[in-house]
Length: 394
Ligand code: ATP
Ligand code: MG
Image (cartoon, rainbow, N blue to C red; front, side, top):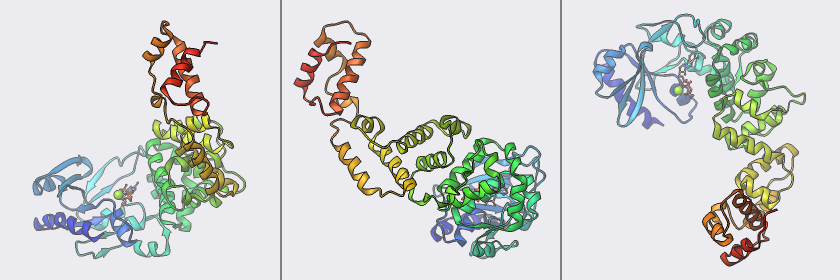
C-alpha cells in the first residue's frame, strides 16, 4: 500500500519544489487510515491548473474549470486539483461556481463526510480538522458541517452515505441520519446515472443488507430511479448478501426480495447497461426455476443456473452443494454447448434434402438440437445425416 504513496510522493515533491503546497486527499487517505487497498491517489494543491501543466511534462486537462489536471508519472495517473471553494449547487449537478483558494482547510470543508475531508502530507502526517479519523474509529458517518445544509446542497451525498454504510459497515450519526430522511425527496433532482453508480458500489459492500434496510426505513428507497419497496419482514437485513459474489446476483436478489413485478422496467429505470440487465433477468428466472430439464439447462447455461440456485437456496434455507452437484452432473450429460457444436451446416442440410431454402431449415435445426441435447440423437455425423433424411416438416 505504501508503495503507491511512495510513487505518488514524487508528484507532491515536484509541486513543493516550485513553492506550492500539495497533499493526498479524499478516498486514498480514508482507505489508508482504514488499512484498505488504495484505488487511486488524488492530490490537492494551491498550485493552479496552469502551474501543474507547467511543472509536469505529461498532463491531461480533464476539468480545468474545476481545477483538475491529471498528471501522468511512471504510467500512473494522479488527479491534481487546486484547493477550491464552491457556492450553492443550483442545478444539483455541479457547483454553479468554484473559487480557487489558498488554504487546504477551506478545500477540506467543502467535502461531504468527515472521513473524506482528511488530508495527508508526503510523510504520512494526517491533517484532520473535522475529526474524520475518530469517526472512522467510531464507525460513524457524519457530514462536514450542518447535515441539512450539506444534503440540500447536493442530494447525491445521501446515496454516498448509504454506500459508505454498506462498504465500511458504518452507522450514521444521529443528526446526519435525520437529515437524510428529511431530504430524501431531493434525490429526484439527481441524474439516474450518478445514483446508479453509487448504488452499484453499495451493492458490492459487505453490509449491503444493512444499507438497503436503512434506505427503506429512511424513505430514501422511495426516491430511487425505481423504488425499492419495503417488505414487512425486514428481509433485506436478514438476507445473506455476502454469499453473492456476482453483481447480477445482487441485483436479482433486490428484485426478488422487494417483489418487483415488471423486472425489465425496473432495470430500465435504473439505466442498467444491456449485458448486465440481461444477466440479471436470467438469474431471476433461474432463481424461480425449481426443476431443470436438460433443455432448460442448455438454454440457460450452467453458470446462470448455479447463480440462481444459490439465491434460491439462501431464500429457502436449503443446502446448496448437493443440488449444485446434481445440476453439474446434468450439464455434463449434455453433448453440446451451442448449435455450432453440431457437425452439420445449413448447406449440408440443403444438399441432403435437395429442397429450396426456407424457414424449414431453422425448424429442422431446432428439433435436431433438442433431440441431441436430450440425448435422443447421438452426435455422430452418419446418424445426424440419417436423421435429416428421415425428417419431415409438420
Ligand atoms: P471511491 O473509493 O469510490 O473513489 P471517493 O470518496 O474517493 O470514493 P470520489 O468520487 O473519488 O469518491 O471523490 C473523491 C473525494 O471528493 C471524496 O473523498 C470527497 O472528499 C470528495 N467528494 C466526492 N463527491 C462529493 C460530493 N458529492 N460532495 C462533497 N464532496 C465530495
Ligand atoms: Mg476516489
